[in-house]
Amino acid sequence: MKNVGVVGGGLMGSGIAEVSARAGQDVVVVESSDDAAKAALGRLEKSLQRAESKGKIDSADAVLARIQVVTDLDALADREVVVEAIVEDETAKVELFKRLDTVVSAPDAILASNTSSIPIMKLGVVTSRPTQVIGIHFFNPVPVLQLVELVPSLLTSADTTARSRAWVQDGLGKQAIDCQDRAGFVVNSLLIPFILSAIRMYESGFASAEDIDRGLVLGAAHPQGPLALADLIGLDTTKAVAESLYEEFKEPLYAAPPLLQRMVDAGLLGRKTGRGFYTYG
Ligand code: NAD
Image (cartoon, rainbow, N blue to C red; front, side):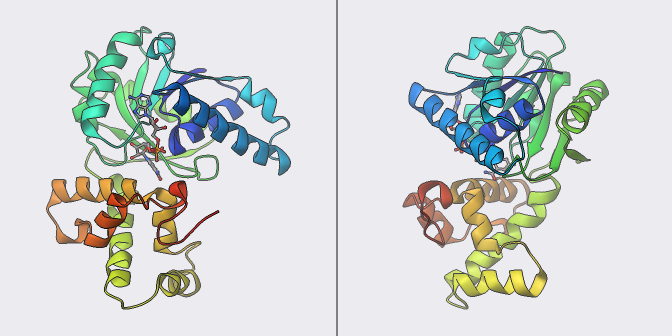
């Protein structure tokens, strides 16, 4: 698959567009407004210039030339694979998959979601082709982290899973693991309760954010602590994933602590807004 579509050019969508274009693929990114499209292009330029200055790519301009950022979903008509990476909101994603089903015309196109927690089945069944709908879950930062979780629903065909695997592994050079369509998949089912425990520990005054993070970095060889990681993921995304896990399993370990909820209400979303558990920029 050489023609890629990405819907949503935020943190993840711009990363997925970048790795696809760096792998020589032709990429169309659809954003929701002109301002959002401009921001997406800015993210791509900044990241590619950084990659060029570190010698990881020859030319940022050459990669950028393979990416178009637009606001019209119809631009996805000829795409062989479309990865949805809009906000983690089930209603918004369901609406989008209904529209993708009418817009994407290639009969065997794969309609993928990068959702962290919404059941793939809910997105598949609103299309006329649930056998071609699959979760392709990348990790942040996409250009750096190797893992992709492949999440077929009960209705996804073996052919869709096999072609998705070939695309991420042979096309993009990532490594895939397989998991079933239940909230959180493998990594977030383990990671989110860990981050929530760190937030509860900080909230209770048991230790400072710095000491919690230093503890895990120096004592458990984590590359960064859980609160710095929450800031990187985005506290809104962290909360949304926790809520999906809680809704699915009703286990207290998945319940978002009050501090996380208040920080999200306050717009303290981590790195992307300049402040979360730490202050940036
Ligand atoms: P983000 O808020 O950075 O980006 C979302 C983008 O989608 C925004 O730029 C927004 O303008 C755009 N958008 C919203 N509605 C749209 C629409 N209808 N059409 C086109 N564009 C639209 O969010 P993100 O962190 O990039 O997360 C995107 C998805 O990836 C979510 O489903 C999230 O759960 C998942 N995910 C996030 C991470 C992470 O670490 N942040 C990791 C893996 C997966």
